[in-house]
Amino acid sequence: MIEVLSLHFTDQCTRSCPGCYMRGKKGPVKDFDFFMPFASIAGQLGIKQIALGGGEPTLFPEFVYHFAESCQKNRVILNMTTNGDGFIPETLSYFRGLTLVSFSIDKHKIRNLGDLESLFGKMQLARKAGLIVGANLQLDPFIINHLYELLDELFRHCDRVYLLQRKPKNFLADTDIKTRLQAASCIYKNLYADESLLMKFGLKDACGRGQKMISIDYCGGVSCCSFDKNFASLNKSRDLVEIIDTHYPFPKTTQCPFL
Figure 1 (cartoon, one colour):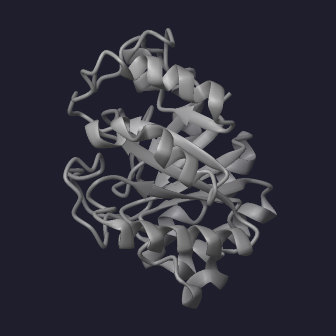
Figure 2: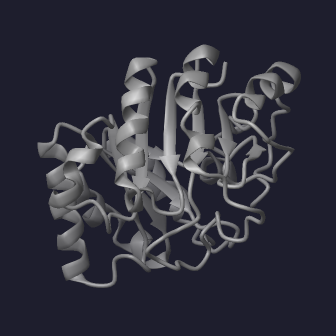
């Protein structure tokens, strides 16, 4: 059964990070009326949670607020991934209907100690609002060399950390990375890793592509995961029901397309 609907409802963002996996998607951007029904559609299909992203979802706090209301009515968990720019006290009330908010961390967003302290402040704000707080940590050589120190600090401010590698660039050549990741998984509770990263180091046979997730981009394109090519395009949001009835389960893969 599909467990997560990944919904990228906007291409607008406050950053221009190199390597953003959503850059380059082509086509007219769907309006909010197209995306709003997915809360009820997920409930109908038995999908347990929706992962809301973009672009940067905090640019549209009113949409997030009303979408969260609809998710609650349909008993669907709503999570959001953000760079944190719009997660501020003035907009906090719009995000209280979320279950989890994950902050993206990489060398382009965190350039100095001030950026890191600002991020920790936003995490504290989210925790005070009763949200589960996550960090999506993009690995690079510097972070890998300071992995334990950074994880120590992150787990003082958030509840879970998700490790991932930049796609499609394959820069993780250090032979000690596998050992460090295995050791870190023993030290830190609620530490997770991108399935493509686990596959790279021979720690997983196959990813959940086609089995546990389905992704919809801001043009209405449907794919088996956020990093995959679209295999269908939605004219109406409810077309998703027919697509899943026709194509699910989608073929598994033992090779991430970005590796």
